[in-house]
Image (cartoon, rainbow, N blue to C red; front, top):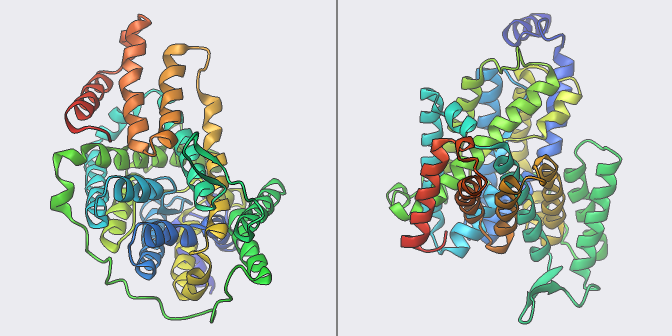
Length: 442
């Protein structure tokens, strides 16, 4: 055992980072628990809602998370876990597949292509130019807008918010329905756990809601706890690359790429800063980390899931003491073990009252980016506000991004600040304007 610990210590650099195997394993378990909710939410969104095979999506989710997290640990040696990204899975389902009528095979093709582009940008180091060209206000607006988007989806799925001919949307007039009461219970329970800073609050909130639902007769009891994983064949290598290469899919591919790019960059910097891994305000091995992310996205699309990205929940593991890739390796192994708990996922993930509170809470966390926007500067505030607003109203992340990228150069021009806008932003604005003019809505 000591020899094994010695090998792991040398490989991951435990001594250099002032950590040990026990601490890293505990940190990995903590990270896994804080993001395990994705194992229920993703099959619900892509399986039950988008029409993909539920069991296959569950397996694809767990495997994609395990592959991406393992690569991050072994290749980049960072305590960061990856999984299909929240917001992008909702965009995949509700905007691309259901809203635009695109087949899920073509949508997976778009995800795969975005991963390939991300890898090329990483290898050629163009990613740094792109990241630096996008103003912070727009980055924060995109994150907050996605938060409102997925929170709205959670409220809609739980039937708390319903359609209304006069006002478009309204609060459900019958809040005493058992499913709605269970959703409200889950929301309050998860909120309580988060305020009390319980590790894995979202995951344990879902489990607690499921138990309450079973007791109330709203949720069916699982037939068993363990089973062999379902077949992956219904989604494996089913992506339609030719269909995704159609010019009309530029905005879709760009949305997948853009959100993944800044999600990953922001998470890498945020988690690494908390762990004390930044050196001279620079991130060592950043190229390896971004490569792991792009390969994970391509692998996920091939397996049958939406864009895989780095999770900010990794900060929970860092707070527990995780400092090296061993934290990620531990989380990856737990994702693989989760494959054998499919009966629980099958029983619970299809119940909107269990998954919806998680969507709302994650939306709240993402909306915290609003505080970073310069609201007193209208040239910053207007593009940011409309980016945030249009995502839930247009039911499209891509539309929100496009409007923000069009308005930002315009407001800067009006404000006599044209030189503050990077040339790349002018090019993107023209592309999005052309997309609206010639191909309609996004």
